Length: 440
Image (cartoon, rainbow, N blue to C red):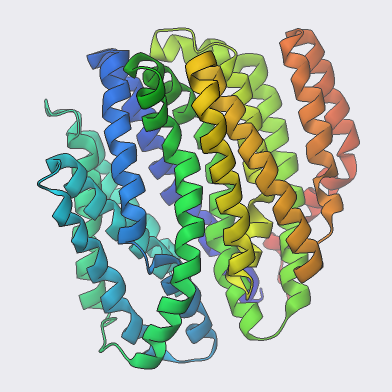
């Protein structure tokens, strides 16, 4: 099996565990807190956690660049260069402690989350994603233990706290800390200045719904949004699994001037994600609303279906924007992400007060759609990625909208979608078979 396939397979398996458990934390937290403390307390707690996670982005300013250049240096055999960029990247999150006077939990959670994001990007950058999975699995035990404590934030404090402890131990154990050098620091600063804005925009679209719905409406609406998105965002861990696996390869291959590999990888992963996510959403539209309402103890309403469709758009453009950000075009990816986030913010100022949870999801769909259009344009002009890869997404969304007519209509739509994607299904089966064999 080739080195690239081994990296994709190892990182994908690791990410299934690590990102799956990370995604499960928000869902379990929302479900248990809603039952234990009520929907209003859930809304306020998730609002503060989301603010902390949003604040963690500037604290993990170097994280994305750390992963990118660690992978490039790995491809070039520059071990000393990798060591020279770790210390400033891992020390920066400690600046979050300055938030303690403002709010104790905000400061602690933001700091710990910044460390987690930095560790994740670093370990995947040096092609050790499986080690991140081990750390997350151990920390998840602490998360579960936190529910035994009366403090509403205890699960996240234990979860992120253990990750921070393991991070420090890992860097020391594998001798990954070196003296920062001017040449590598200039690379980190240059790339991070743009990657940071793009990451901030992306996180706003993920964390913003929680605290913006509380601010523009009420804690109760924030609680409903928390319930819906804690389930809908589980879908985004599928592209994050692939992103964690392939982003280092985008940079690795770009460092070797293999642009065709970058294009092919982006197109193939997009096609797979549209098929897998579209199929999952059809199933969730048939059963998900009722199941989720039972879990949380209240009807999540039609906003759940809109949330699923919004996530589908987000997932579809993910590989191409990762390809832009992993190569030489981070400025383009950042511009598109900022434009989408700004559009969502403006739309929410009207939609949330007028339509509450439904308005949150409509705004997200509009923003993600705008980002997809921008990403498709730049990916085509700069990386020669065909915009035709998004045609099945349009087909899926049109057929899924039948859910607002009846469940029988969306079931028929699902069968039509599978028939339309029959070629891609067969190619996916062949791809899975190829991983079992010996590649060249």
